[in-house]
Structures are given as C-alpha cells and as structure tokens.
Length: 157
Ligand SMILES: [Zn+2]
Ligand SMILES: [Zn+2]
Ligand SMILES: [Zn+2]
Image 1 (cartoon, rainbow, N blue to C red):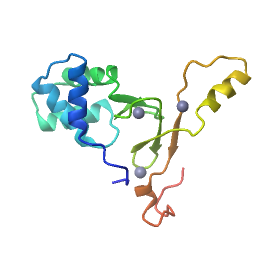
Image 2: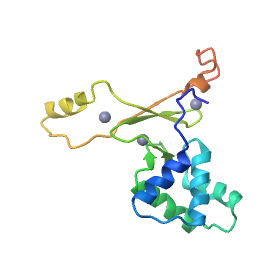
Image 3: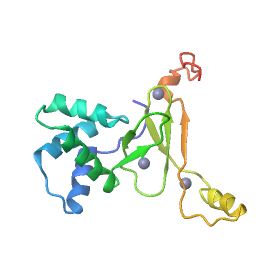
Image 4: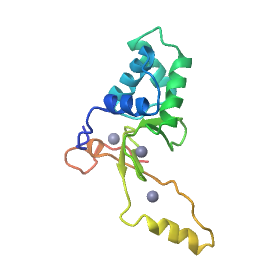
C-alpha cells in the first residue's frame, strides 16, 4: 500500500520466532497473532483488543495484553513514540533501525541512518558516552501525500 517491499508472511515469521524461544502454540495466541499480522498498521492495545474480539469474542483483554507483552519481549512488536497514545507496531526488522510515522494515517516505515555513528559522536561532544539511542521521525507517508506527491489533501499541523 505504501510501496514498501513485501515482507514474506509476518504470521509465519512471528510463529517461528516464538517457537525458537520455546513458546508452544496455543489457539488464542495464534488468533491474536493473525490479527496483529493482518492489521498492517500500528495499533493501540484497545484497538487490538477490539479487533481480536471480532475474530473471536471468547478471547479476553487479559490474553491480548499477555500476548502483546510476549511479542514485545521477543522483539516482534515495538512501542512507538506517539504524542498522546500507547501505540505499538509489528516490526520484523532485526538489528538497529529507526521508524518514521505518518502523522495523518499513523502508518510506520523503517529507515536507517547512513551515518548512525554521528549520533554517538554528537553525544560524546557533550561529554557523555552513548550506550544506545532512540530516534523516531514523523512525517507524511506517500499514500497520504497523494499520487501527485504534492500533499494537497494533507491537513496542516
Ligand atoms: Zn522496528
Ligand atoms: Zn499516511
Ligand atoms: Zn540509530
């Protein structure tokens, strides 16, 4: 939808990552994983709970939160910085990377810095040694900018 390259079958990737870490398959968890994989955009815990309830009304909020926590522990779901919401995204990108979030539709894309070491060097200039950093960009995605790319329909900040 945003012209990003196909990442093959998120559900399988999630299942095998959990299996590698010794978690056995359970039916409610598979349903929750399916919902996370099919959402295709960042979500809040209550959005996820509502979508899971549509798929299987028998799965409660507690199960959804437990699986969400498990996915975060396994690094399959990341919390995004958002001004006033608790937002998570499925992320199958391994290694150090950053996210850019569309302020119109909330979609997110992964990017990396050509010179990521510049962050550490800037930190060292103020006398700190850097252990890690968090950097997230905000902007307008290609779909929301429109085919013309001129962003005519994008509401002002
Ligand atoms: Zn990520
Ligand atoms: Zn967008
Ligand atoms: Zn970085």
